[in-house]
Amino acid sequence: MGLLATRRILLGLGGGIAAYKAPELVRRLRDAGAEVRVVMSAAAARFVSKLSLEVVSGFPVGDDLWSTDDARIVHTDLARDSDLVILAPATADLIGKIRHGLADDLLTTTVMAAKTPVLVCPAMNTEMLDNPLVQDNIAHLRSLARYTFLEPGVGLLACGITGPGRQPDPPEIIEAAAAVLADKDLRGLAAIVSAGPTREPIDPVRFIGNHSTGTMGFAIARALAARGATVTLVAGPVSLRTPVGVARRVDVETADEMLAALTELWPSTDFLAMTAAVADYRPAQRSQEKIKKTDASGDSAMPPTLALARTPDILKTLAARPDRSRVMLLGFAAETHDVIDYAKAKLVDKDLDAILANRVGVPESGFGPGDNIGTLVFRDGTFVEFARAPKELFADALVAALAPRLTHLARRSAHA
Ligand code: C5P
Image 1 (cartoon, rainbow, N blue to C red):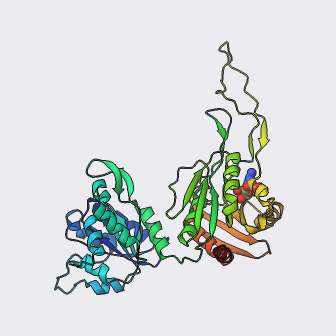
Image 2 (image 1 turned 30 degrees about the vertical axis):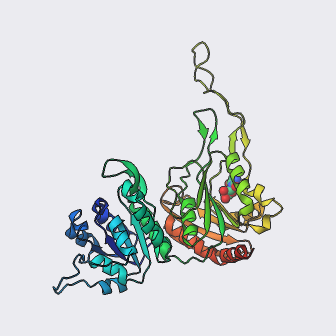
Image 3 (image 1 turned 180 degrees about the vertical axis):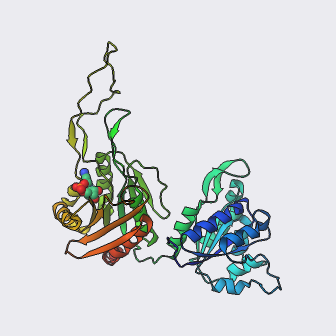
């Protein structure tokens, strides 16, 4: 199960080339736990086969408003039986029709009859997207609470030019859909999530680092943003896409840079989740030139000895600030045994409000895209155990467990 478990999604296809991606999108929506029904315009049927969509969705696909056969797909039923409509691709024509209240086929009548939220994924040629009429239609629909737009990506388009207009990939559409359906109970909360490793340079080509991929922190940033928080992600060197809904991303490399970024953000922060795997040591000296294996005469050089220095403890440094009590601090601990005892000791040592104790050394959990297992321990000694889950779901469960305290901070911020 995934981010869309038990959700009923109606996927509407406009007639654009990106419709060819629909079977893969249906597959991925179903992998995320959704039940998916598909309605397509006549033009979409020129780009993708109805049969493929019926096979991957497991349901008949609607494309005819006027069908009179027994399996007639009725627009009002489709509208009533879904939690969310996703329009992907949303073409200039489809967006224009919806904006102007036109409904002349099964897809547009279904959208017209639906009371659910609509996630619109515009995908078209850049010039069409830039057209002031299209922009005006998008701006108008955006102003209505019912419609959420997912920005099209930049890439090579079917027309041969590179620019905005590309339909985002399924993981982004799934994140956006989950966000549309989430409660917005954290609106007003200013949150920072640090994620990934830090890299401490030895010379211009070498560094001390660790295996952190940033997956957990990025998932937590997504989960907070989905519930309405304004999230800034401070990321070490990782190769992950910024999650949907994250307001700002600051990329850093070293522990010193991470501390500087967090110090700058601190005054406007209510909550800091310090997920980053900060290097504990850095080379005491950073060589400005590449350290060579050979000496001046070309002979093998003696292997250098690397003197190390401690990096700043970022959480401790921030926790020592005079206005520390204004901010809720969540730390992370990776332990192989006596997890809760060690985590509690770390919570006290670093003056945190809560700590997530991760079990490491368990197969398929730990660094990377796999699962996580852990216990959230609060300062008052109460704790919440999390069963093993993929990191995306683990992040949702963690944010749900934090939510009662975070909503309190969000309300305080709203009244400030
Ligand atoms: O002391 P330890 O590294 O086990 O603590 C882990 C927690 O402390 C994590 O939340 C990590 O982000 C944070 N940390 C830090 N600065 C460091 C090392 C770890 O803020 N230099």
